[in-house]
Image 1 (cartoon, rainbow, N blue to C red):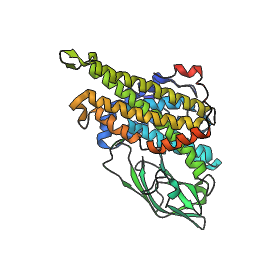
Image 2 (spheres, one colour):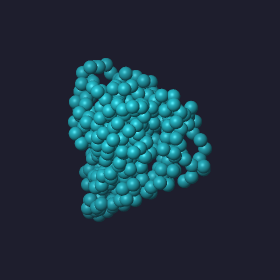
Image 3 (tube, one colour):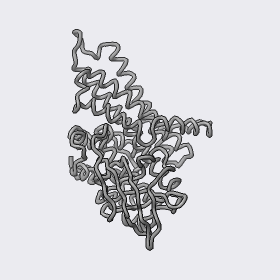
Image 4 (spheres, helix red, strand yellow):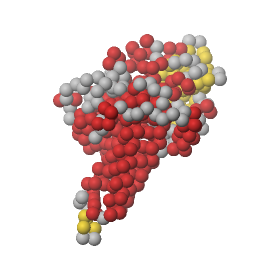
Length: 395
């Protein structure tokens, strides 16, 4: 499908059918190849850019599509249905673009945002380290002030899209706080080493980012010096968590679609297995999970669009439930497909591996259980009711 064949979408409005058509024609047919090769092909990245998906959340004034949180969630759900590795690209790229748009200087926004929105530059989010994942306060990467800027030293690990990124959003310790830096890929002293053999989202081009006497100018600082955690990190991770939650709904939907198709064709005991009561139980649970997870994501998106104080809790809850739902759906999909679903290269096996990763990234399930319990205790008021118009948004 060519981007030129489609009429533009009005800014801020979702076009679920258009998203689905793009995924069905451009993303899903390449999912197995991406999983096996460990990379998102350049032509798929170009198609994402041509369709405006790399700048979907960027304001129109900066060259983006200006989608609100709800339609953006719909997009990430559909892409997640087609291929979790491609959704990973959208997630980390969007995290960088969103952080620049929220915390960047006028010069940084003018320079980077149009290029990120057009796909002329890809972004990666470099926060995690070997000993600093769920607890960024233990960050070891340092930024030492030098004449005209900073010297970055340290190692970032598990960085999705590190192998393809043109600019990395790197977090380092400055004194008693954490500061964010926009570091071009070709900066001397920055080296990216591939991380191979990952369980899921194998096309996420994961790498280790090594910073050795990596010098950047003061203009590379994004947001306030020493206060990057509560500003830049929080903004980016909230977006990432919402994107992953939406992508989890896509995985669960893909599992349901594959299971329905298989049970319509597979005979056992003289009948299609769709007529077996225990198979129906599995399909019913899957369908209920998909609907519930989708509505939680829509609610989180609506609250994010209103900058509602309840949005963080809604986003954490959506990601927590959707990741678990994706894992249940993937497990049952493998079960329904039997031995065929256990073979590397089968879609069911890919869903199973990708779904497991979702319970670890953007806040592990256990961390989420701690945070959600704390947030609920702090605010016992019920979340705002879902706007009626959102009830019709989705599949």
